[in-house]
Every structure is written in structure tokens, then in C-alpha cells.
Image 1 (cartoon, rainbow, N blue to C red):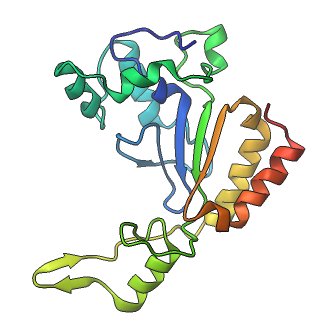
Image 2 (image 1 turned 180 degrees about the vertical axis):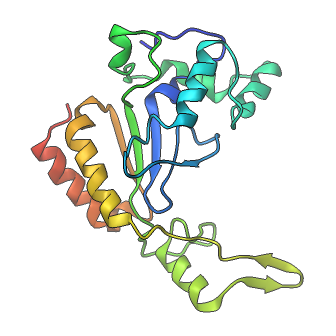
Length: 208
């Protein structure tokens, strides 16, 4: 059970991390602004921004970045993502909250990883962040510029993806046992070598 019951507490902020190895960004909600994390420390779940957001929520305050989405829905009398996610089925609170129910530096229970944009498709509704074939076409043809509409090719992929993968696998060896959900996103996960690498890793380091 998620024990933090202040008026703004959000389980996503404590339990969830999305990691983009392509851009070295992270977030703890799809609605909030993504931000860079220190890939040397590789503590993507406890960035200064996330710690600050949790501290605000402990005080019953809304964080500054992105949380206005839920705030506005709740002010209008609706059920926001924050409210609907307070009771995730099958998700447990971070282990640190067993000893300190107001801990802000915690281990996530839900991890989503974008290993790369490798994909064998170039769907019309997608983009270079999630399709290597889109990215290749953009590099070949440059910016889209037609009838006053300009769509810049501004996707810059990190040069450190391979070293960041190794750091992520090291993190999973130590912390994977605490996860209840692990999502591999893409690109196309079934087309990426990292899927099999993750299966092999969890064979060696089981996550119940």
C-alpha cells in the first residue's frame, strides 16, 4: 500500500521511472517534463528534480513541472492520473518506505526503458525518436519545408548509448529484484537485441 496520503501525493513520483537512453532523459510520469540525469551516477530515479517534486508533495504542494495537468483536472472535479494511479493493482510501495514512510530517495517499482530507436517500421504517426528508419530518412532528406511549414530534424541521439546500456544492466543486477513492472519500449522491442539481453539477465538475476 502506498502510505503517503497528502493532498497532492502521487504514487508515480515515488514508484515509476521512464529512462530514455537515446537522449539521457528521465521522467516519473508521462505528463511531466522530461529532464536530463547524471549518467555517471546513473541514479535516474533520484534526480534533484524528482526529489524536489516529492518534497513538495509531502507538504501537500503541487510541484512546478508538469503536474498542472492533474491539478487542473482535480480543480474541475475530475479524476486525474494522480488519483487513478494511487491504487495500482499489484504494485508495492518502494522498500525504503517500510522503514521511513516519508522517504524521498527511493528505489522504483516500475521501470520503462527506451534502449534505442531501432525499428524496422516507419509508421506515419511516429517520429525519429522511436524509429531508426524515420531518423535515416530525415538525415537523407533534411528538414521538411513546404508551403511555409517547417518541421526540423532536431533529434540528436546520445553517443554514450552502449556505455549507458551497461550501466543500466548493472543497475538491474542490483535493483531488478525490487521491480514489479519492467517495460521495454522502443523503437520496436521485438526487433532489438536488448530484449533477449534482458531475458538473459533476469534468468541470471531473478526478479520474482
